[in-house]
View 1 (cartoon, rainbow, N blue to C red):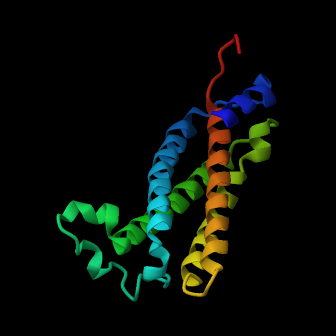
View 2: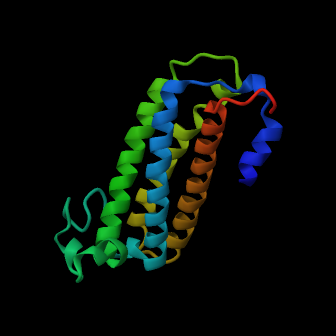
View 3: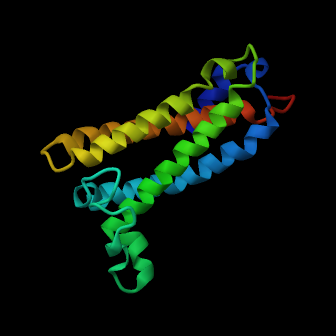
Amino acid sequence: YTFWFALSFSVKKHQVVVPKSLRTLTAVIGGVLFIQLVYGAFMAGLHAAVYAPTWPKINGQWIPTNMNNLSPAWINILENRIAIHFIHRGLAYILVVLVMVWWYKVSKIKTGSFFNKTKWMPSVLILLQAVLGIFTVLLSPFGNNLVYFGVAHQWVAMLFLMSLLLMWYLMIPKSKES
């Protein structure tokens, strides 16, 4: 809310663009990101990275066999570290693809607005986020690397969220009074 409020003072009405075709895709990315952030919190809270310190496979398997070890079965999506790891990675891949599709679509929009100057942010940040996530997992068994890379991974997640909020702000039509 604070960031949105700051944008209302920082971004002039004439800098706002309204590409209707991108609003739905941006909202979908925001929804997937929300779920991803929840699973990122599960990853951090359960220290799940150290239970599968491999990439691209999870402990040598594309689909880990021990994702459904807990009973009742639904509890696996909340407490099974390998299942949480699998979901978090899967959502990351989905986000990267969605943001690259978003970038492809947005690169065709040519305006002299603030949007045109900042539309690169989500795609660069999501790629950086993915690389940091991979290094967080691979280096997790080696001392404080998990902490350093994990914090960097979380920090870039916050920047990505802010960049997405900025794009959303620039896509919402403003009323005449604002």
